[in-house]
Length: 230
Image (cartoon, rainbow, N blue to C red; front, side, top):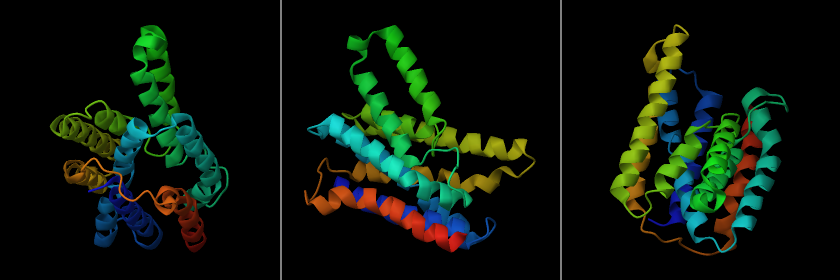
């Protein structure tokens, strides 16, 4: 499976996730199923991001593209999530930007130095807590990037972070007097493990459409579904 195919799987699962939140009640079976599928989205893109970081010919352009579209997508994201334009939570492209910067820090650790490296990691993780997918986006990305030569280690580390993510969601439910299984769909992140093993190391078609489609589709579909929701 190429990176392009993984991206399109991520797009389909993202639509499923967002359709669930717009059209179905949280206790409906279809809601749980669609959101379970939707958990594939961000981790799959973390896989694509880690591979892009390794293979891109220009990391500065890649990072600038992430930030540019993160800014463009923020108003549609805020409107979709809250019906306002001022949601104090960054969209997932900001999560990916933090993840990208974190990989840069890890790769240049010796050059940066331990103290500065630790400070940079802490700052980036704190920033990611203000974005969609919180700290787990960067952790998913690092689990794939730092084990890029061994799929078994990728899968094990990724699975551990997935279980941690689900456990935290379940704990938050219980702490608010809600049943822990109310967030059972969060365990859908484990569905990315077969994708990790299916990835063949290839990019797929180099057509510009494949490069830009996700960046454009992400804010566009948020506008459409946001209007339908509110």
